[in-house]
Image (cartoon, rainbow, N blue to C red; front, side, top):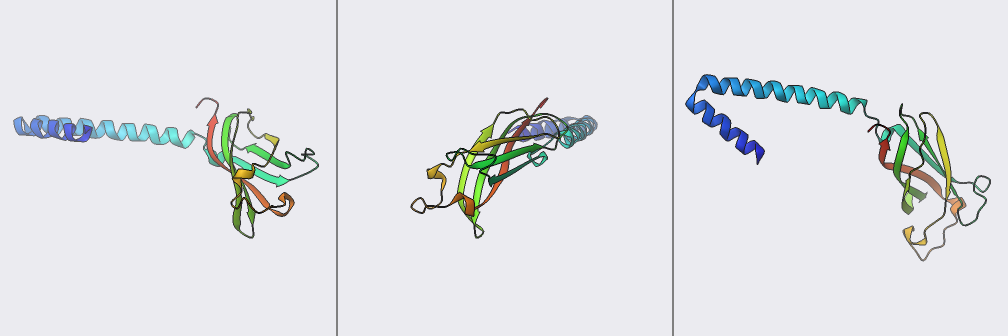
Length: 152
């Protein structure tokens, strides 16, 4: 809707005075380029979920509680503290996803640091709920979906 109104204003300005219409178009072009450059530079400086890596595996030494057997390590590769990360905990068997659960961690992770935590398995997150999978035999991974860093 804003584009239509802006276009109508430019058209009316051109009809009354071509010189004034040219000035309005030039000013809008300069403002648009300035705004584009400012937002492009800001987005290059912002860390993204690609600045976070998540590894997961079955590890009875790190996670001795049998109700929480999956060890998840969240590593912050950005230059700012990670405040929140949402991620999917995924298990594959022969390249097929058999388990997917969403999690969120509000643990603050300093730049370059790793935070580890143990998670339990939600029986409703298995692809086939009638099959009993052994977590030791699955390939575990974590995929970040949303991140929030300090200062953003």
